[in-house]
Amino acid sequence: MTIRDDIVAEVPRLRRYARVLLKNQSAADDLVQDCLERALSRLHLFRPGTNLRAWLFTIMHNLHVNTMIRARREMPGSNGDAASDCLDSAVPPAQGEGLAVRDMERALDQLTAEQRTVVLLVGVEGLTYAETASILEVPVGTVMSRLARGRERLRVLMNGEDPNAPGRVS
Amino acid sequence: MSEERRVTEADFHAYLDGELDAATTAEVEEWLADHAEDAARLESWRRQRDALGALHTDILDAPLPAGMRAVLNRRAPRNHRGRWLRIAASLVLLLVGAASGWLANEAMAPRATEAASFVHRAVGAHVVFTREKRHAVEARAGEKHLVGWLSNRVGRRLNPPVLEAAGYELVGGRLVADDGRPAAQYMYQDRSGKRLTLYVRSARNAKDTAFRVVAEQGVSAFYWIENPYAYALVGQVTRRQLISLGETVRTHLRGS
Image (cartoon, rainbow over all chains, first blue to last red; front, top):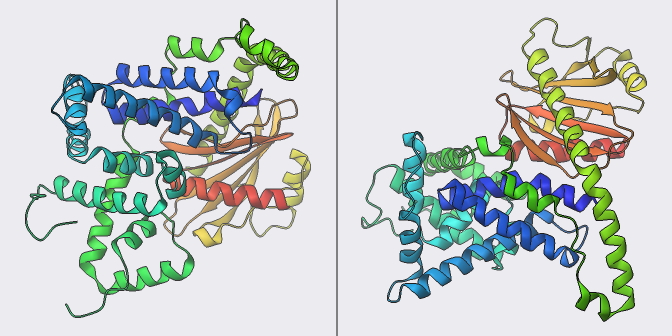
């Protein structure tokens, strides 16, 4: 059953992506473990020959989104991003990490959840636009516009410019 | 500026991510040559993407937590009464699945280790020989016997893939002792002197694997097993470049 082997081979990438997304290793590993349990229980739904990595990331993305929605319901009056920020800030930053990493993480926090997801799938994982679009179930054009906006915002934030300054709408 | 803008923001990003066709790529490059501000923004997006790609790469090589290994090693569930009763055909399928799951569990650990130790040796050979200046290869690219010799020793026709479109030229090749068996290493170099190696050995009893990418000892390796051979492409390049080079190499090797 090579498919199990192939899943095993994808686990490090899932863990790394979840780590960047959640900024905390144990929260990340919980998410990955949920993802693996679900994937293995639905192995019969995977069509051999299709993209296993995209399939696993889709499962993980959906689990993450559901967690965010649940968190939002438990905190009435806040929007999705505030909910995710709340969840994130409940987690103390790991010790001993480079300043650059923390700067990057802080800047990522300021993107919308949609921009962040696209920026990470393409930037961290090196997924193609088509793979990213299929994971998020949106058109490729949407991936491209979220990516352009997210990266530009990140650039401005990392340069220490004011992202709300006039003239930098994108 | 009154100049009409043909190149969109989305084009810049697609250019950066290697998603454009040749014609649009040329247009973007032409635009960038004349527009320093856009070129600078593109450069900073590139740095940003590289920084994102470098986040937490240590996790890629870290051992899996015990809980996760347990999930992965769990045998196929046995008590699926409701499902078993549904259709006779699915019963048969489930039995086959459970049996092979059982077998896979027994076989999985050694096989994963085999691929990992293969790539480990390929990386080792890369690190050792790419450092050499005068003796980087045993036979140079122009030498007639290079391909025939390595092909004979490894056991398959091994025409070195042409990577000139990606800026890499073949330097030559050498024979490497790999766990008591012959392996071939082809070495490539780009203009800046950056080196890339392709490592091939026979792997008769190994199971095919999909592409995998690992980072080890400061280099990245793209590897796969296509019975009866195992292949690894190793270099200090970005993940995306490596994957693209790896796909070129695989296509080439399949065709030769």
